[in-house]
Image 1 (cartoon, rainbow, N blue to C red):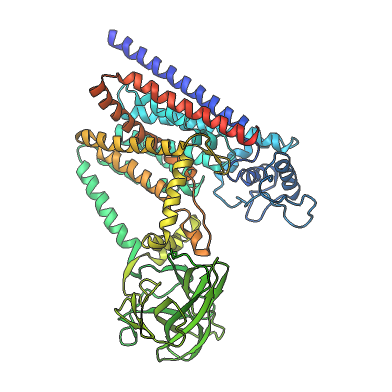
Image 2: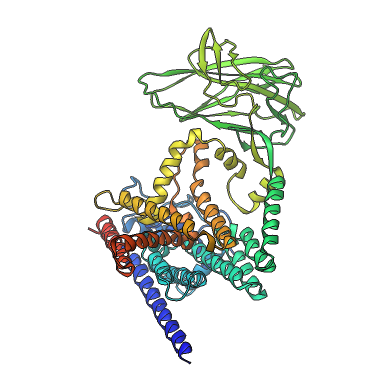
Length: 638
């Protein structure tokens, strides 16, 4: 009887703590709703537009749908609240036929969030759009409460009663300014975060509790909710197989489950990927032959670039980014572009195209069955730079089928028009041209080095459910040289926006080097977690570690690589941490484990009890929140 009373008392205390945490989440979210002016969240005008269209038009919106009067009202509200003050332009509210600009349309994105966000708007059709926006912001707080509640349930599954993680995990999540900010926005991220958090909780519960049809059904439903909410959490559909598999085999046959996972990874890799695509080259458009062997014809090595032109097919194009030249220049620079080109019959094709900051340079040449080396020169201004080279034969107006070959692609400084280079090796990395030594700016110029690519059927399947070009991303991952600057900027951006960067990422914390301090704070948590995992390695349930690790790597990896394709058009898009927030629970779990591990050593060597250190940690979070509130107020209202 005494044990029962003790358990009941502990349960009541924990539930009271959960209620308090949820109330704090409401306070945090409401504060951000009040502080952040209308429309000053990522894509908020067009996110709201999608929900408004669902609520107000007949039938579900499709690509291109908009309401001009609604856009006029939103744009007027944006002007009224200072949205365009620093942008240097204002939309034309008197425009008749031309679509009034309020941002990039979100219509066509996965629909579930917008259908849910439209529910309150159906009863507010006669009200002002700004008022409707605030109602939907309040509605978004429900998803924040779901995420915080899921964090508590997640912690309960993994820890014993009265373990500090049980309340520290949800508390640290709701006190995270960046998370609270996005959770008070009209944005499909809030639903993606909530549903994926529930999915992770359901997966852990299934693996901890064992096989149950109800638990499996809940997991499957949540994975489908993720699929129809946002592309960032579609990974849930594949991840669901892991908890289901381990629950079916149970603890007694866990080794069999691991064998199935290992076999699945190997078979999946063989089914989805092919080896032999030229490394450092990326498929941008159309399709090229998967067979690059041209032995007996290639002037350089045994391979080359092969394009099959058939009537009705769009022109194929493969490309390579050119690493930035670190040399400072004060005059124009002449570049020579060259390549061996031939075909299976005489025709006119394009040379390699040199993509410069604001223009493209190429030539049309006549080729036949005999490989010939073609060159041309191009002057590049001081403020310009060549950022990409691409290969494409161009259109096929004749309507017949041709095969065109390229080999030994050359990009070198200087005027060497008409000169044929003598390459040092089959890869064409360097050699002599006009009697002078050169280093080729093109890597793997003869397609001799192999890389990985997705098989054609996988690319076609992925393109139907997710935006972007997956093969392009696969190619870029294998070619880090031109993206070092992007990777450095992205790490910085993800760190800043994960903790506290607001608006459209333009509102940064005030104070002395706040992000350096937060970076050290993050690094301490990661290093502490590594020590903790090593210290408790014998107690880790590796199937849970594998499941959560895949989620972390998958979501954070996708966020990290989200902007790489922008470089293909000379752009520079740096992603932010909202795309990684769906794994906010395991992310904060790792950091909390690390901080608690550091507290363990502080208590051991300095005799400072852990509970006092935890209060210091909470105080630091509260101080960060206060600085964030002051930052936002100063930026928008002072």
